[in-house]
Image 1: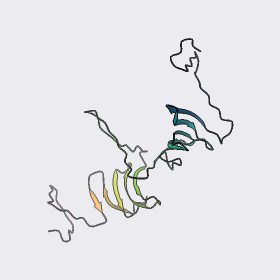
Image 2 (image 1 turned 30 degrees about the vertical axis):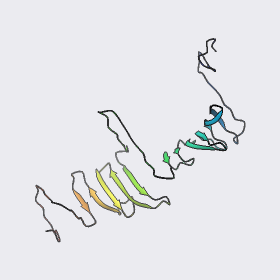
Image 3 (image 1 turned 60 degrees about the vertical axis):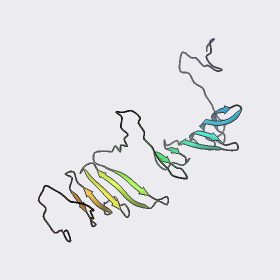
Image 4 (image 1 turned 120 degrees about the vertical axis):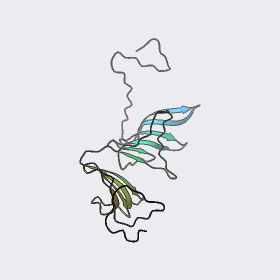
Amino acid sequence: GTNNPAANLHIDSSADARLILDRNASSNDAKVRFYSAGTLMWGTGLVENTSDYSISYWNGSAWSHPLNVTGSGYVGIGTTAPAGILHTYFNGDSNVIFETPHSSGTSKLTLRNHANRESYIIFEETDGTQNGAITFEADTNMLRFHNGGFAENNSTAKMTIDSSGNITGSANLEIAGNISGSSTSTGSFGGLA
């Protein structure tokens, strides 16, 4: 489509410009492959025997898929079987880093939910055992801390902070230091000295 190519292959079209890779069987892949000095390094495209899209690395004998997107829209980093919208897996210390070098920038992790629903951060073992959670109820503005398990009916909540900043809990509170306040306190304080 051009008599003045700017690269080894240059596709120029007055309409949509397309490059089509069509595999004739699902057991094949359909990848664009990248070489370094004649050595195959990376590829991107359809994974054989699946409908998944992957950024793939060639280790000299087989493909691995560091980033995988399923037909359902689930993204796996380090896994080809993501169990959620975003699933990361690494066989070692696993860190997720949000970095902004800008002097007026901030790093944020936002959980955005419907006004009548809850947001959860769940602490879970690899076998699925849920050991604790931090939950926020948008309709009541209740922030809850769960320990020793997690139940959506809040039976595992050990501490709750309401929208006024009042704290209630189902366990003993130990404070190492001074307690100060400006409001009247009433009730039974047990062994408070």
